[in-house]
Length: 343
Image (tube, rainbow, N blue to C red):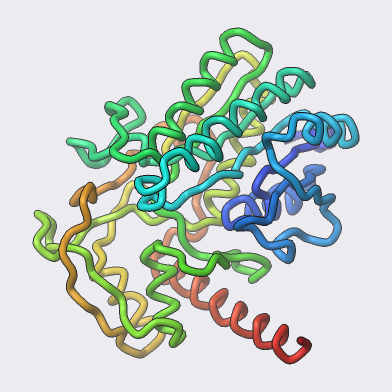
């Protein structure tokens, strides 16, 4: 990417104090893009945003605030990560998800259109596919979400498609599979308490923060009976966002919808075995019944993103993903201990 184009395209990252958003901020900053962050800090952490990145505390649905940021920063692109992401919670409290994900995204998109922002990158999810009949799953597979979280994201994708047809804006919707790991330089990682993602749960157990790890379902039609998932390193995912932005700038008439995964699956037992190898200790495992709606296998077909972008993952080894996640867990404990000493 031409350095002048980067300078001419300041980026606003919503949810930039959260897990994936903070890594996107690092990837943009490392590549020389002017970047600012908007986050309400409900689930994000102020420490995750570098000191030299302008930070605004507030909601993406605050049109006046978004307009002010765009004006102050000359924003030309928005990367939208802000939202709620816990699938079981979306089932228990669907209106929260339609408010935080769909309605808030609608307000943000409207503010972007009003301000003339030409590029929009959206943090979507493989949950838009529901339980696919075929795995690996391509972008053209039926979109039949099985929970409000997936629907809330799919509705935003639909809004973006309609808006791009009616206004001078193009967009990229990136559908994530299972995001894990942490920044290799340990500048950010998954910090939210009570996280439900397997690798995060497993490294918490390895670090002594949990007594055991539950395996939900051991009778699936998979090689070892446990669910198989496609795990993508968060830093590789962040780079995909930067490359998607470059593609949007290069061709303003084109929008993109792409899976973000490696096209390779690991079972729950394989993940836990890898954590054991990395740590040199054994995690206690408990067998639990299947969870409703969990597919046996969910693996991405990454053909489109590999054909569209010069995206070459650097951290696709599962042991590397686990090691980085474990390293961040250790750093989190050190940070919290330091806070206690200073408190």
